[in-house]
Each structure stands twice: as structure tokens, then as C-alpha cells.
Image 1 (cartoon, rainbow, N blue to C red):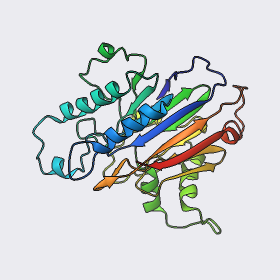
Image 2: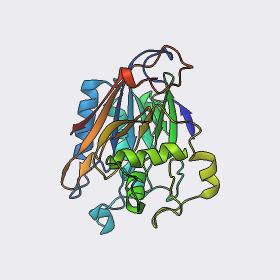
Image 3: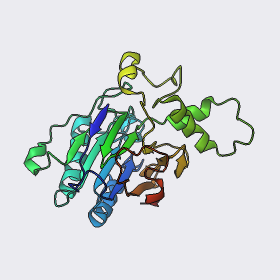
Image 4: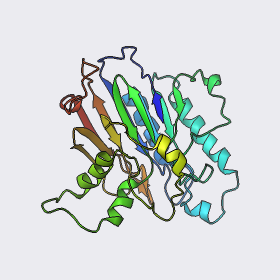
Length: 280
């Protein structure tokens, strides 16, 4: 699904912008206090990114307390509290916030492609209607003439587990996995899918194919975090914001778009961009 998201800058042609990207889980495995998320919001308040992309899971089906049934409130209420925390933390900023669901979100539809979140939080109450966006998984954003493709599905891990033969001289395993996605123009180029992925083939044809390679491709994964050039696309795995009992990593990307919005060459943004993976 393609969504146009307008960041803080009103110039949609060549203004540079900063993107912060974090992927769930957003809380450690021993509690549901969401301390890594609170730490992330402090960095957002300091950095003031133009765009904040948050990819699920927000209410992780693999969390011990959820598996054991120790949660005393509905899953939807737990999610709404995190949305409210994020909206409040950014209400004094011009940051656009994008929420991306995950198939591991226990309160949401367990299917891929996945529809956007819904929430009972009154977004207009915070005067945040133009800043807060709930999008599908996968999704393609258009920001200042820069296309950002993203999916919360761990396709890199799934592809890696299915590889049987590696081409000679192909020592960059992560780069090789990314190229499968770009070459096949699909957010999930694996058939059949892994056992725990419920693929809706009808919706897949409509919403999970890449008509062209994006300028930036965000692929959160349990595999090692990275930022690299693959076929002229800036590919980023921000890692997980929480890893077990400790905080994990997130990514920041500084982008300077080309002044020629029709320029779709491999050097469209790469010479003017910087990606960094940071430990929370």
C-alpha cells in the first residue's frame, strides 16, 4: 500500500530530513513497563526527527507475560497506552509518526499483508491528526520525493533459513538476502511462506509487490543490524529496540534528496545520505 507522508518541511522537493526508525519489541522480556520505548522517546525529543517510523510488535505475542496469561488488562488497552505515550512525547514537535503493525502483535490481524492499526485514542484531541499515521504492513512512503519501503515481517530471517546454495564469491550474506527482495520486486519473495505466516495471496498481489526499487528499504530483523547500499538502494535493518532483558538498537537516517525529482538513478540519495544504527 502506498502512503504519502509529509514531514515537517513544507518543501517537497529537495529539503534534507532526518528519519528515526525503531522496531519492536519495545519492552524487555521480563516486564511490560516499556522502558526502552520511554528511552527512545527521550532521544526523539532531543533529536527532533522529521519522521519517526515505529514498526511492531507493540504487544508481542512472544512476550513471556502474554504467553503465560499474566496480563490483567486487554491487549488493545496496552497498545492504546503506548500510542498515547508516543503521541504525548511528540506533541511539542513537528515530527510525523508512522505506526506499522506486525504479525506478532497479539491484538491485531494475524495475516500478511496486514491492515493498519486502529486505536481508541482520540488523536485530534492532541492536535496530531496531520502528524500521526497508521499504515499497512508492508507499506511504501513518499517523503520529499524519496520513496521508503518498509515491512515489519522478518523476511531476511525467513529467506536465510531457506537458502540452500550460495553463489561463488558471495560472502556478504545479508546483502545477498536483500538482493532477493529487490530482484524479485516483492516484500516477501518466498513461496511457500514459513509456517507461522498467514499469507493472503489475493491481497498480496495488490499490496506486497514492489513496482520499483525504493530509495530506502527498511527491513527489521533478528539478524545482525546493518545499513548498506544494495543495487543503489539504502537498506537498513535497525535491529530490535529491546533484546531479551536489555535495550537493543534503533536507526537514524539523514537524507538529502536530489533536486531533480525525476532522477531515479542509483545515485538518487546515496551520495547525500547517512545511516547510523545506535544502541538505546
